[in-house]
Length: 366
Image 1 (cartoon, rainbow, N blue to C red):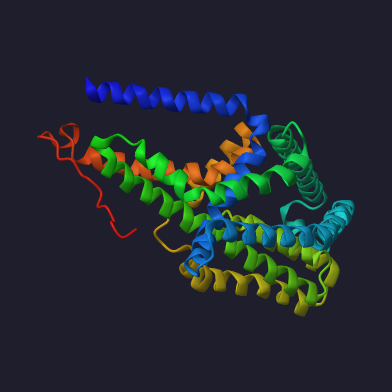
Image 2 (cartoon, rainbow, N blue to C red):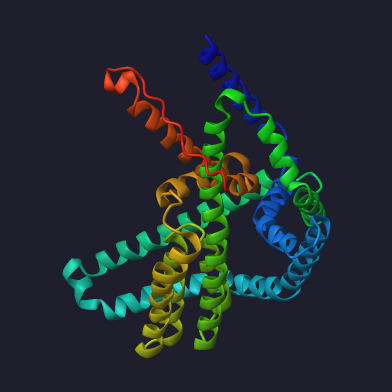
């Protein structure tokens, strides 16, 4: 009966939490963003504390630096990327038409074998339908994210409330963790602490590490493509870097966009087209062999397919707030699922014997 009551209690707690998220999702964005920002910056605050700076002073220094970097980004990077994005959208139909023309000119013999003019018409119609469906889907997706993630007070609340929330959470972070830890059931406290450490390790390893990987890759792609002279190189590079948060998606998106623009812009100069391809091949080599093993690690446990599903699912349900919550929740669900699988494999339901309880090792030095 005790176990049954515990299960009912945690199920009800989960249901109430989901219900509250659904009710207050319109105003959650600045608070969730502030919490995520405080979580990412907490190790930096701890390092500053070890130098002799108090927690309040360390949090204040971090907040000022973050605001300065954010203002510079708004004044320099965002206008540039916005201008290139607008021009890219305007030129997209002409780029697609030019790619179709080049495909017809260079693939004439193959098209004749497939059926001549009828095959060409079918190919053009299929490409046109695919492009229109893709643009429509992207517009619907972005509109859903905007409407689902928009706070009641608009963007102003995100820009003003988020830093304030992050500052206060950063100041009281250790105290909050200790308080929540004291609420854990005493009988299962060691097990819960071990699971929480695994969740924190998974989230920290992916979010902090992958965010740094995205920043490095986005900067490299943007600078390299711009120096190469590729149109919209900064926008394509930064977009590829941001989307690299989802493994393989960012590099594939950037490769397709950059190669399409390079073929239209540089044809028939194969040297610059191959150089564009080489930039992404080199970027993927560095990411796979240096950046990801060093910054992210191999013990995160977030499969790319599970990560993509979590981002799409939570983004669809809760908008931009869902995107911020997707990775932590996906990591937490993964850790809990692995622990539940361990318990099942040692249970009478699987073994047909007396249950063997597995308690994760507690790292007392952590």
